[in-house]
Image (cartoon, rainbow, N blue to C red; front, side, top):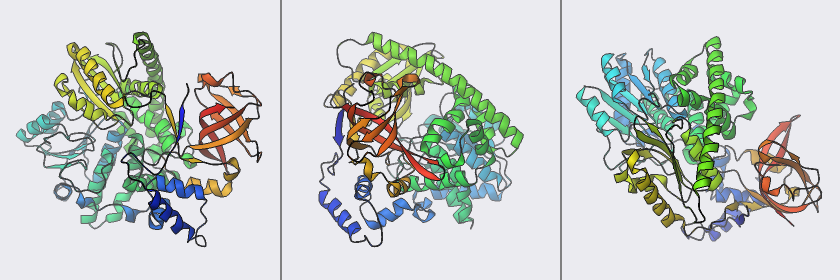
Length: 580
C-alpha cells in the first residue's frame, strides 16, 4: 500500500508557530558546545518531544526522584492518606480490589506488599472477567462485608461505580478509589476518589495509570510516616503497569518508568525475575517493548482465560519454587491465548473483508456470539493496526453484547461512546481504549451511528496512510556517539515515541530473506558513504518483487539497539521503502 511520507515541523495541530522558539533552543545549545557535544539531529528530536531549553534537556536525559510531583496536590489524597495511616496504626485489615489486566494486577500487588510491610495481611479481590466483568462488583462488596472489612481500596477501576459505592456505603464499607479513567459527570460518593482527570483536581500531570495513582497514595503515606524513600521500592510495579497501559511517557511517567526499569535491570524481585527467565529476557533488555510484548501478555493471559488472581499470586511471592511454577503457568496460558487470539483475529479479518463494499469505511464494528471475551481487546487492536480505523469488537456474554474498543490518534473513542450513550448499557475508558456493553438488539443501530460519528471526524483525513518522520539523516551520522546519545532517549512510548528517520540514496546489498508473516531481512548500504546497516521489514508482502539485491531506494525506519561484544549495534526496523 502506498504511504505518504511527512516530515514533522514546528507548527503543531494548534497552529502556533514554534520556529522562533526552536531557533532560540538551538542557539542556547550551540552556546554550550564547549560543555556538551550534541549532534544537531538531537536538538530537533528533543524539541519535538517538548524539550525547550537546556534545563529541560538535563531533566529529560537524567530523570530522577526530585522530578516527581507532590502527591498531596492530587484531590482527596490527604483524606485517603489519613485513612490508610489509621488502618496501619490500628492493624485494620482492608480489601485491595484490582482489575484483571496488568495495571490492576500490578497495582493490587504493590498495595498488598506495601500494607504487608506494616504487618497487615490485606484481602485481595480480582474480579472474574466473564462472570463479573470490569470493575467493582456487588460480589466483592458482599465478600468484604462477610469478612468484616470496613475499607476497600480500588485500583484501576471505580470512577464510574456510583451504584456499587452507594451500596457499599449502605453496608458500612468505605471506598478509596485510585483510578485514571475518564470520570463521568457525577463521581461516586466514596471516602476519597483519586483520579487526576477529575475536573476539580489540580494535580499537574493527567496521565498516570491506575498503579501510578495508587503509588502516589503510597508516596503520601510514606511522607507522612517519615519514611519517604520506602515508596520507591515499588517503582518496578509502576514501570510495568505504565508501559503495559500504553500511558504517555513524558513528565512524571518518564521518571517512574526510567527508575522502575533501572530497578528491574539491576535487581529484579523474585517474581519478575521468574517471568523474565521463562521468557528468556535478559536484564539488560528491559524496555517498553520487552514489557509490552513479553511480560505484559503473560500477566494478562491468566485473566483473559481464567482466574486473574494467579498473576497476583506470582507477583507477590518470594518463594522460588512457587514463582517458577506460576511463571510456567502464565507462559502456558499465554501460548493458549495466542492460539485463540489468532483464530478470532483471522475470523474478524475475514468478516470485515467479506462485509466491505466499495464505499469507504470510517469505522469497524464486529460482533459474533462465540468469540472469547478475554481476547477481543487484542483483536480490536489488530484490526486498528491493519486498517487504521476506530474499532469495536463485541461478543455475547449472559445475553448482552460485551466488547472492547480501540482507536487511532485522530479519534477520541471515549467521547464517541459518550455520544452513543443512549444506545449502550454502560461504557468506560479513555481516548484510545474503552469497554462497553450493549443490548443485542441495539448493535445495528449503534454500528450505524458510530460510523456516522467516525465519518464526521475522519472524512477530512487522507485515506492513504502516512509515515510521520522526525528527521532526515544520513547513515554516516549514525556513529558510536549518535548511538550512545540515542540510548538516553529511552524509555520510548506514547509522548516519547521511537524517532522515525528518513535516509535517501540507498542500495539493497544482500539477497533478502523472507521469514514468516512476510517479514523481510536484508542489508541497506548508503551509496555515497558505503555505510551499511542490517534491516528488517515486518509484514511486507507488497515489496517482495521489488526488494532484490541491487535495488535502489529511500527508507523510513526506526532504530533498534542491541549489544554485541560490549558494543552498541543498530538494526533498522523499516516502516516503508520507496524504490527508485
